[in-house]
Image (cartoon, rainbow, N blue to C red; front, side, top):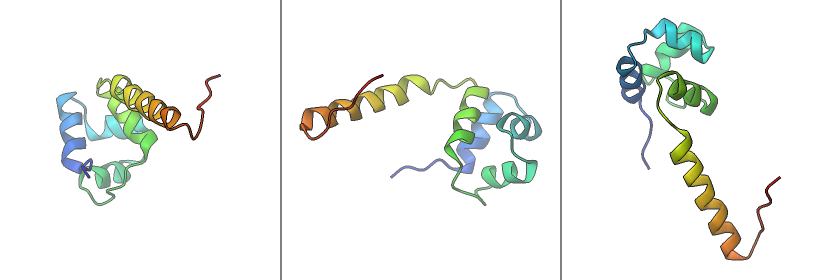
Length: 87
């Protein structure tokens, strides 16, 4: 299973020409927590932090995530076990 590493997070930030302080503020975490993510001290980044990180770095997460979720929905419905309802 592939993991998101501190190196990935650092690369995203640097590619977007952002400082650690800018990113910490945008993700709404303290600078120490941010540094821990980039240094892989806290390897399990919270999903909402990661999604905010991606948006701030202008990486389009919607296409791949939506495709993945739609695929999951289709597979579950095709199994006949459960119908996934849309509102």
